[in-house]
Amino acid sequence: MINETFIIDTNSLITPYRNYYAFDIVPTFWSSMEQAIVSGRVIILDKVFDELVKNDDGLSKWIKSKHITPLKSNDINIIGNYTDVINYISEAKCYNVDALRRWSEVTVADPWLIASARTHGYSVVTLETSANLTQLTSKVKIPDVCRHFNIKCYNLYNMMRELSFKL
Image (cartoon, rainbow, N blue to C red; front, side, top):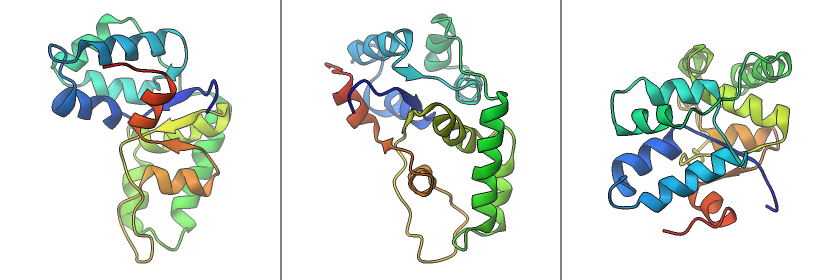
């Protein structure tokens, strides 16, 4: 994982904010995250940014106050990889039509996150875990799609370790 760049899923910020690392209890998590974003080691995709700021909460205020320039998903190469991700969901025998319908919604960040990682060689960070793909499902999980496209996918704690977060 030496000098990897990570692109982070919405849940890897919302879940710590709501459940583990409140700003007033573990401010070092948030200062470390800010430093990682500013240094370019952690990337925020525009679709993730939009999901984060749509709530009127402390996390929304925090992300807005940092004046982050999110990675734009309208890059032609990202769009091409997005098409590949959606085609995979459409053609894979393990996903039903509801899975395709949900992931095809333009505001859903997950396929764009994977497409951006594939385009730029980033590693994906998510708190999602792999699903049981032995039966038809409507729940597409980021780690499963990353595996299909040979994209590295880590949980938040692996990224924190790599970036030497100290709490």
